[in-house]
Image (cartoon, rainbow, N blue to C red):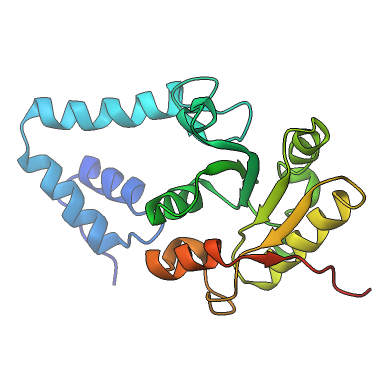
Length: 206
């Protein structure tokens, strides 16, 4: 049975909100009605923040993390260990690792993992720029911190092959994270220990 909306404007707003991941039409309706109860300034501020986010946000030219400037705060921080680069799938994973307070190096955000089923290949990810960072000579250790999924493991393997023969140590986070788990949903203690007790990455036999 189709929902009957008293206003086309309301229906349009609900349709737009329901496009967000994890937001069904009932939740979208609740969010829209909440905004309607707010004063004009609050709603305009909400809308402008989203527009500014889309128009003004940048991606760090070095690690590809979301940033307000060309070089993100982490890459620009001289206290970070530039010899270590933690390779993660997305910005949420950077936030998850940072929350552990157990890692003090830099990051490299791939923008996804290799997934042929989803049409995502190596060329769609920031792998070549990682290789260039390693070639610069400053990076001494690459920490593979991708989700423990088939796609994550395949991406680990591809990266290890690209870095083969280069003077860099390749490690992988400890398997305190269950197989199939997404990094961002792992609790901070488990993730922190996985970073601390990382192990050398062993390339699977072909």
